[in-house]
Image 1 (cartoon, rainbow over the protein chains, first blue to last red):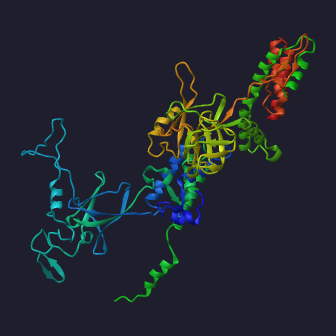
Image 2: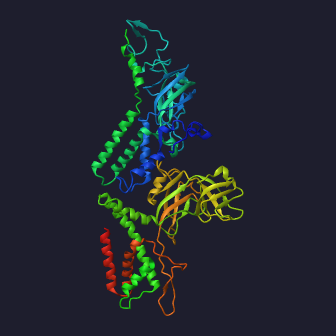
Image 3: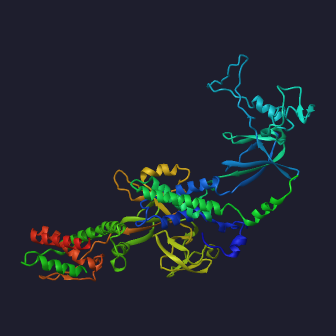
Length: 307
Length: 315
């Protein structure tokens, strides 16, 4: 990637979008990585020769994908309304989520994933519980299962301490600091901390590509923090990597190619493996954002008096 | 060089006045000898690389590889390819020995046809607006004859100054940016299907690929197909290739009742294209063929022995 002038950087040379180059110096492009690798690591006098560019491209992209899942810490954040159907369609470049929050009254409330399921498919059945089929032999499915219908209608009870809890608004008896209710099976001693959360809950239906929320999320704003794989929707010219990881990617490509090549001595493969691992460790430490200033802020609390 | 080669050959084989070879025979032997030696350069280059990797090669004056590369590079040609129809298929040059690189010129700045009077080193198109599309350094391709030049100056909206005199009136041109040029990767026929179906490595305009092919039931293939198939510009594809050496031709003026007299000014004269240092090897090779031709085994054996000796020294 060519170096930019100040005008190119700040104003994108007067063309839209103006912010196209902001922060770009942190990154090296996939194009540069592949080109540099072919130039510096592949040749008649190098460890690697007679390999195709597409092999390098493939391994470079695989490395970038893996790094995007955790090491990069490049979180994407999307805000969307959850409507009455309590469904949030996953972003198009979604791979995994980091956190899902409710934004309400100027506050972010981190949500908890429901430990139970809150969605199900449903087959149509007759009075004798026999499954019904269409003329092609396919099972007939209901648009909503009873579970989904109840959840959307807000009648599904929740084991969480939110308004859908069966205990919400009920009277009980406090004996020696513990609450007792005269319904339900058995006594209840203290909180189940796993479900002690009053916010709405969610469950991700990965195959369907949606997040199903409990009824408390109807018409609320949802913020999802998630990771993608860095492939920029297939646009190779936009794929970039933080410069901290540039050397690691070269080492990774070198290792995986040597590792899968016939007749390469084991000590060379091992050397490449160690190289790769050491560089990944280095890059992760560099990118870990452990700044003295932040440490100081936390350590200032060490002499607090506890009551 | 060709005349001194011929004189040497004749002086060796014509000792007893029965070893004369005609100019046409000499030209045939010379072409064969040159081709042999030309191909040897690639094998020599390879064996030299093996030596280098065994640390059996030196640097500086001992860098044999450098000399070999220089000779091979002296046959390197760059040219834009002509398109077959309007698809992503392009004709290869007829004289190529080895395709080294294929380039994709991805940014077409302007195209059109020249009009007005033909002016040397100028491109004139009265319908163009070059001032807003073209800059100095852009590459101009004459798509009528695939010649190329660089823009030296943008004279006006309708006129460019070029680094070479390539445009005449009524010819078509394409102008490309001299940046954003992509190398097109060679892929074998048995890989291209999987490559184009791969999510991560499918050819794109950033990483294009090509396959050689185009054979019919009667003709050998001499085309490349470029992927992605959206690459269809008439002059989008350029190649850098190693061409065959041109067949040497010892030309002469016929004297009545005498020896043909060497004439290097003939229109079809062609000297050897290999370096002067190859003269002894060329002579040896020609002697091998000439010895066979005149049934003189001693000459053939001499040529072979000399060639073996030379090879021994080089290796």
